[in-house]
Length: 84
Image (cartoon, rainbow, N blue to C red; front, top):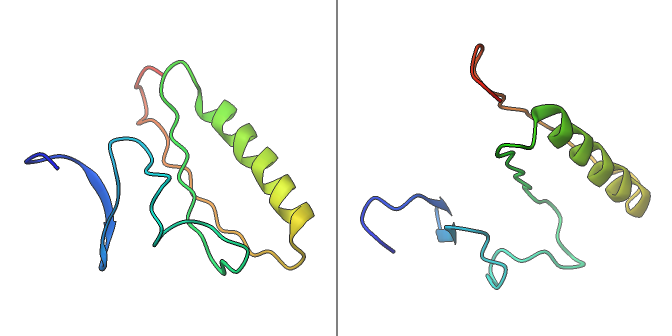
């Protein structure tokens, strides 16, 4: 890692740096995974509404695969007046 580099981490250590680290054994999704956090970023030219449509599609697939799935979502949108 580089000084002042932005990383995702938890109390056990860094889980992701730069782009997604898919080889992370400790944080990988498996058949016995009980909970997960999925973060989707929208960079221009992708809009907040296009990102929301992507989330809706992902959730439709997850609900079809798992009965009783519980989901919470949060959209952190562009500030008012910002170009997006």
